[in-house]
Length: 437
Image (cartoon, rainbow, N blue to C red; front, top):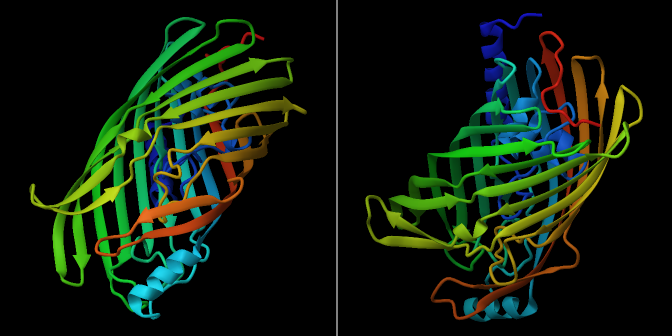
């Protein structure tokens, strides 16, 4: 089967369109407002070993661009994930009393209700082999996102009424197979980033809102390698660079609108994956990710063209870590089962937790599988339950001149369901990424 240039372009553009449409809003599930849900294949095993590549999926390109080298001719994958979070913030009695004292008993003092918003997230991957040594790819993903929306007037409304963050990242990649055990790749990142943050200007239920909006297109790069140092072993290391965004937008308040600038640097990530064949049917996997969230300190929102600071966003995050382990078992040539567990050290702690994103350290429990309908057409399904053990503490300074802190606790969990379709075009060829089992 020959893939014409026109058909190739149509498939690539369909992947871009899917990510633009479905990746527009998401709930953060990779520490802070990062999104890890970029692969149904990885979802079924808590993303263990994704940077090592292997298997039939090329979606590991998100973690390590060198996975592009495992393509045989031309391959296209589309992944869609449903994220169904639940997160509730319970206002403390002390905060309720303080709000009542300041407002004469007329202030908003209720709990947040469920601030989590269900959303769809899409990702697309395409790879084409130019020669026995060179392959090219294109990944369209949404690596950052957040939607939270407390119910109406509530006790923390001067900190947040609603929050929305979205991104679309287009990453073309070039891969080179250097030897039968080593491959490398690199690429560029072109990323659109958009925010919309809204909060009340007072404690009364009828207090008007202030709204901050801004967007920008930023650029970065990716790099990585895969090695097969021993029989049945694959190791991959991938790097996604930081991306600087100069947001331009508006700060809308009851007093009027102001054009703003804000410099935001989104963090780089290092991913390490290991894939080890135990038997012809059983493979175990492991992964570690580090994300440099400590780049995100306090963001000063300034009047356009270097003017005065109008407001600040005090993130002050710490670095994030994610550890995962999983397994794949081929029950038959048509069906492969997966399972995995992960533990995440969140960049958000008791020192910096706020009401827009009451994140905390959490566990991932995952299961999934793949069905090969034919040699060319395959489907993947993955599910994860992510939960924070116990309750998380919130203690945030309120805007001046309010003379007290906002105190509360939060409880969060999320159900994630992911599915994908994968199609291989062209004639059959020996795989380039060899596991040597």
